[in-house]
Each structure stands twice: as structure tokens, then as C-alpha cells.
Length: 363
Image 1 (cartoon, rainbow, N blue to C red):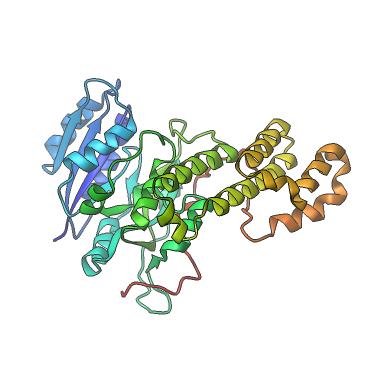
Image 2 (image 1 turned 60 degrees about the vertical axis):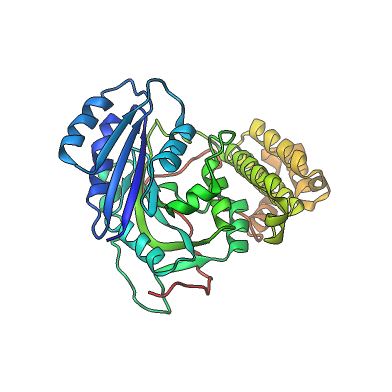
């Protein structure tokens, strides 16, 4: 039976801790060991953990004497504690879906070239959202595989468009995690995607179409309230950080500096169109400034000139330009953003199942 170590960083999440731990020890077909790392919580986490330690022999608990932050906590668990062949990092407020670990490790047991397996995450605020989640059911056919391999170049390009992976679904070979090193302290909000980029050039990344985790949305989420441009800036910093450290490698996979900067500038302009539709003029200016910073040549584009015209005319006189904006939104690479002020919504699925990949893993 394959062994999996699970790292559960927790800070003031005592009221969620039991649900998370139960979802981990309910996993079938794997031998699970769990470490809760309490980053100096001020709630009753120690008392909750003490009770869970009695109930689950495979559970361990550490408490920091002072708060050191989530990045240092991640690295402590992943690099200093994890010893099983596979490791998972999951926040104390999230839950693992039934069968998630078995589905992941079966693929890595069969195919040593796979260094990491991820899947879909259901975003939830209540148990009602989880009750409506799709039930994992294998198709068992070559025409409709349950697992696919991301071609490295396609995966890295997809990172430019947005983080394609939901963190609580990721199961990694522990030796691969050790070889790529720690999470970057410089990237507190986008270190996960920078980590996936490191994995992508060191081993194959496989994705399963099933819901592997339930990711909680609540007022305590660090990402709550970030609008689209903030997310874009964080993503840009992560890609710049990684490419700056190994430019030649990532350029070989299509992530040249020109491609990244042009793509990010074009997305910022697209987000500006979304902010125009909801009347957020300050956000529009921020988007345009960011676009110019990363790719000054965007000022020569037709879409830039159209935006300048819309700004001069104002909302009341731009009705005739709606068709132009619609055409722009349907252009290759354009994202579907109904309102760029809104964050993730409960009941939706996070993750990327690439429909047009021919590469698949044997079932």
C-alpha cells in the first residue's frame, strides 16, 4: 500500500480542523500520515489538535512559539518532515475528496515519469455545494481517459493565462519536491504556480478529471477581494521570478520574455475593458499603466487605441462600440470575465482539464 504524507498548515482554523483531518484519514487504498503545523494560532487549535491526536494514531502536531508565516510553514512540512514517497499540502480549511489520494498515487506508481498529479477542486461555502459535487466515476475508455499528461510547453503557456492547478489537489513525489527546493518567500500569493513551473521541467505533470478536493471560500481566504489586475500582477511576478532564474530552459518551452510580457499586457488591456463595463475608471488606469510597464509596444495596438477612444467618449457614447468590444472578447486567448471585481464563486470548479490533449495515461 502506497504511503502518503500530508502537511496541514493551520492558523486560527480550529473550527475547520476536524473536517480536514477526517477527510484525510477517510482515504482508502493508501497509508496516510498527517502533520498539523500550528503557526502560533490564538484560537483553541491546541485543544482541538489534542482531541484529534487521541482519535487518529497517524496524526502528528507541531506548534510554533511565534508566527513565521505560511511560506516558511509549507517548507518546514514539505522539506523537513515529509518522508513518504508522496506528499500533499492542504490548508486546514480545505477538504480532500473521497478516493483522491488513491487516484493520484495509482498513476505515479504505474508511471515513474510522472512527478505530480493534480485534479479539479470544488469551491464551496456550505455542505450543500459539496453534496452537489460530481461523483468520481471512471470512464475506463481510451477515447475518454480519466487522466492526461500536460505537455510541458502547453502547461507553461497555460500558466501565463492563469494558474491551471488547484493547490489542495496536488500530490507530489517527495523526492521531486526536495530536488526543486522550497517555496519562494518572495511570492506569498503566487508561490504555488511558480512551484508548478519548477515541477513541469523536472517531471511529467498529470491531471485527473475528477474533483480531488473541496476548497473553502470564506472571509478568511488570503485571496478574497483580489480583483483581476491584482491576480495578473501576482502571476506576472511568479513567472518573472522563475524565468529570471532559468531563462534558457523556459525559453526552450516557449516562455520567452517577449511572449510573457506581450501576453500579460494584452490580458491587462482585456481586463481594462471589463472594468470599463462596470464603471471602474481608477482600475482602468491601473490596468493600462501595468500594460505599458510590461510591454510598451501595446500602445501601438488597435485595441489600445479603441480603449483610448472609449475613455474619451465616455460610457454614454460608447454604445456603438459594443460590437467592437465583443469581437475583442472573442479573440484568441481572451478570458471570459463577467465582472473583474468578482473573485471565485462557490459551486464552481477550479482546475484545468485540457479538452484537446491527445496525450493520455494508460488506465
